Image (cartoon, rainbow, N blue to C red):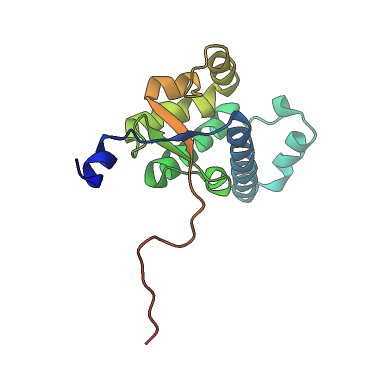
Length: 165
């Protein structure tokens, strides 16, 4: 048996991301999305309407809805994680969402995973943690057949020679 045949028969080792790393990635994403959302919102709707929200009185502002920000979060994760497998928070912490074999997840799987994060995160995480498995999946990760893995922080691509002219 040659070395290449041995390598092919060895299972791929994926490093499952820790819950704490995933939380901090989510936190980074949350700050980015909220700052961006409120910047765009204040420009388009106007700063006077922002005052009740800043005071914590969400009921007074008819233009602010939980659903709206959840849709923004959903689209943020759907687009970035489908295109690159990583949101900005995941990039910062060297995490990536993949299918169960470590390959790129399809858009349906990413959409299912993003749906849980954007609209039902507390339930998704609590139930996922209660029934957690060795893959550390939230419920919507399990439904979408995705996992979050730790990736190498490699700035230099392998097998590339650089030559100056």
